[in-house]
Length: 279
Image 1 (tube, rainbow, N blue to C red):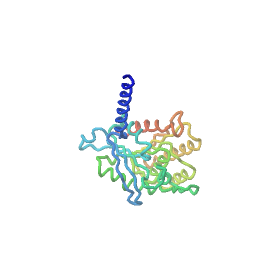
Image 2 (tube, rainbow, N blue to C red):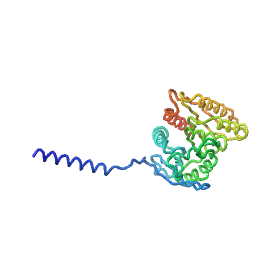
Image 3 (tube, rainbow, N blue to C red):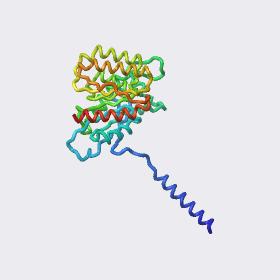
Image 4 (tube, rainbow, N blue to C red):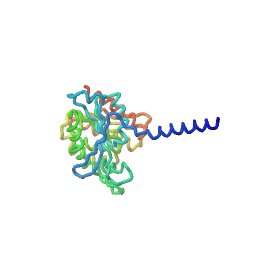
């Protein structure tokens, strides 16, 4: 009898466990939708991860500031959590990597879309930042502003590493794309920095972009050359004050390398941004 009872209990537990496994489903971030989008110039396919603030559907006339972020798969969770606590009125839009590239590396397109110079010593396309910026301006921003209640005067760009370098390129070529720029640990090298330096001399100081503000950060333990280029870029930003580009100065993330500086960069920059927009 005890043997039969044990068998019955075991079968019951297996059945319960089986029901639990069958009912499992993927986690979905609250108030977030995934919208396919095509680059109208190249035909490339991407996705937008759009997270709306709580109460969005209850405020029919309220326009919202928007944070546009590159590397959406890597960044949306941290940005979502940080805005939930520090900037609850923000719409967050993550821009994915190309979804129809045909490469088994999901992030393969970032080396093409975020780089500003062409590199000969690589098997991947590079240096198409201008094309990607056109996609963001002509397709991404227009899609968001045509379909959601946004404040066009309160656009923010968020980029980290290669996305930080790409944001620096946007800032120096078409600064009116965004009002606020968050550039975390930008992946400058000798070629890309020389290109940006020339842009400052040739164009930026001749343009007036009042109200453009920049948050720039880097980890204290990052490579010496990365620290050097980022400090030099901050000097370029100081030179650009005459063009209406204001920088907070270089934010050093203590005891952090390139990877571990990311979480603190998100939290500190969103805290900074919340002060910028409420002022």
